[in-house]
Image (cartoon, rainbow, N blue to C red; front, side, top):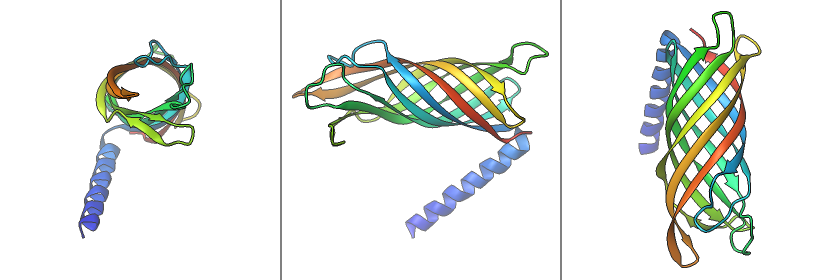
Length: 197
């Protein structure tokens, strides 16, 4: 019974948000694959360059401002294998605000500046995909700059550069240590305008 009530509440909330968005402004969905370049070691572990992808929803509530929320997954491998940890995976949620400005009065290109938070965790995994350690979710932050190129009325290409920072506690062997996962993410998103008012 609790599951049915939860499902009804979630469905009702989503329908109300969609109706509100239809009455108010522009709602976009974006899929963004990326290449990621660490700017420091993860604790005592040097990392190779990594990659990932994310799905994001943004809602333009004013002519130059959007709120966004989404989910993303990123993966990094250690530069030197110790036959224990094969890779690190970072997953979680992102949220924040974007400032959107056309490059000129005539231009269809828009400059995007964004800043927000992330609620992510880091997992150390073996070659078989078994979880060796999980940092638990914690808050970090990110900033980004990008452009949007319209390719049709509802589709856009959105290349961007993002700086991402997350600090967590993880076990390395038998010792718990503070680790910082800081990296530059270069991505090209494909954005679809779901609602355009």
